[in-house]
Length: 180
Image: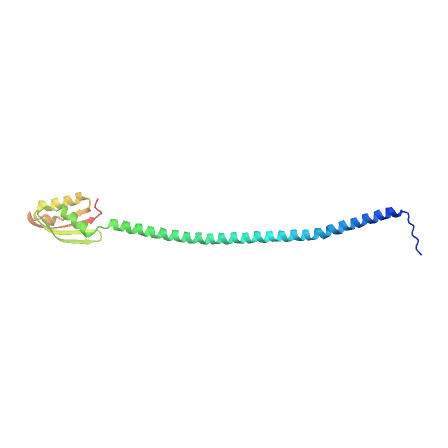
């Protein structure tokens, strides 16, 4: 047996029931609304995180591509530097070497009229000039002019080339240098 005592008037009971229903509606309604909002927020965060990761991958890919390009440029710079060094060495070597025509020109420009060059031997930087002169003094003058020309160094005229006073055969040896 159950005894229920109704201490609240009917009108107040109705107000309390309505308040409880409103409370339940608000509580469950906010849960119903809040759960999708939270789910949407989580999905939005996942989307943002995915885009950030994609951008990070794109940046990483770009950096790797740029790094690859930098490595290619460094290799190209190294190759260019090697080529430039080889070209400078070749230019230096070409400047240090005289063409035989330059040596012949220097010899003919400094030879007295009565000196005839009969043989010219060029071996590396060593030059040997053989010839004849009408007089011994012409051979000495020829040697002095060659020394003064700046095209030859270490000129040697053996004394045996100066034995004859007239119709002198001579041999002059020298080191060639670039004419200035």
